[in-house]
Amino acid sequence: MSRRSDRLFRIVNFLQGRRRAVTAARIAVEFGVTPRTIYRDIQDLMLSGVPISGEAGVGYVLDRSFTLPPVQFDAEELECLVLGLSMACSWTDETTAATARQTMGKIKALLGTRQREALQGVALFAPHSAQKIPWRVDFSAIRRAIRVRQTVQIEYVDESGAHSVRTVRPLALAFFGSVWLMLGWCELRAGFRNFRLDRLRALTVLSEHFRDEPGKRLHDYLKSIPFQDNLRD
Image (cartoon, rainbow, N blue to C red):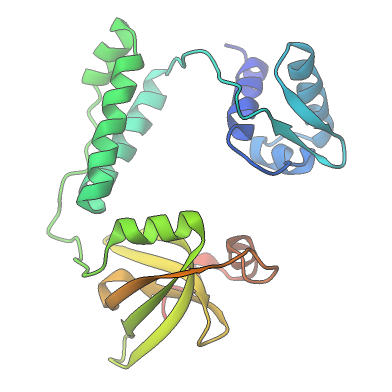
């Protein structure tokens, strides 16, 4: 597959499942090309029958009913899949691990004989480790709260041992070695904060849902705060 053909395939993948229009500038950043190149790529995809709607300056949306033909993975892509799913099995919770194993089963079912053989030969592992720091809260409940934008109430103990109860808009989960962080907008502090899962004494998912608001979104967090310099609360 040529570099351009690969990019066209990846653009369709990138647009799949997105509810809102994505601008050519945003797509260009994702693929390391110019917006002008994306305009040409989108035009060619539309002419080939891919149901993309939109226009330059506004953004593009792919018909959600559109599906791609079966995917072919090369050796390096298979290695990344195996490693990522192995890490999910070893460094998250059992619910996520079960989903990872189910996903691997589905991937195997889609592969041809050669690719299944290549998959069996992948020698990348992420085994369980004594360095994993346990937590008391429900990891998958946090994942779901992030997905559906549901606020949570937490009981938290910071590095100095101070206890607090907070209402948080959970925005992401981030893994740093053996430590998991919940990134979110803290209503108590009226700002972005990171909470180590092993320091959460309790977590309750509330019925309240939140909307993306300028200045309180994950995008704003990543843009305004140096990621590696804001690891404590």
